[in-house]
Amino acid sequence: MNQPLPIKLALVDDHILFRKGLRSLIESIGDDYSILFEADSGNDLQQKLRTQDAPDMILLDIQMPGMDGIETVAWLGQHFPGIRILVVSMIHQEETIVKMLRLGVKGYVCKDVEPNVLAEALRSIFNKGYYYTDFVSGKLIHSLQQDIAARRDVSSRINQREKEFLQLACSEMTYNEIAATMYLSPKTIDGYRTSLFEKLNCKTRVGLALFAVRNGLVNFS
Image (cartoon, rainbow, N blue to C red):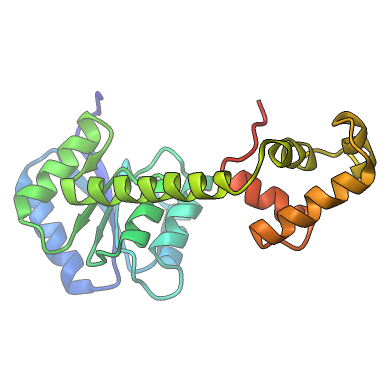
């Protein structure tokens, strides 16, 4: 990826000492990077982006007062999707890491890494578009494997006709229209609905649709 130099960065972390140390470290790497500004929270970042030029990349903490890192990434994705995000955090929990990756961050490093790892992460994001350590990649792979296993478990509890009903239940068709489409009686359709409510622990048609979408049980193509 060709990036005009210097690459413009912003540092977002509520710990002043860490931000200053991070700034010094980045400045010691060379002239490839220019730090536009610092912010101590997502709210502070929002304010600065209203009055200053947008950076090419943001180095972002997760645990911050007010608007935390997760909320900040979601907001940036809506308003500044072109800004690349490198998370620099002490959080090691798989759920948080995977959530950030799915929100679109381009890299994730822990605050206790060696300085050369941060330099490598910056280079990789601008040369390849991403930077994930083996640790982070392993977390993502494990999460995806769990998702697949969960979907297989759910799918195994639903028979083919129930899957057909579920697909149609995610449309705007009425239950009577679904019955006609499946060449079944309304009473049989009621039976499918009741069965799926029990199997999927849902109480409404909307709940069925949300469950089906989240677990990849319906196809909208």
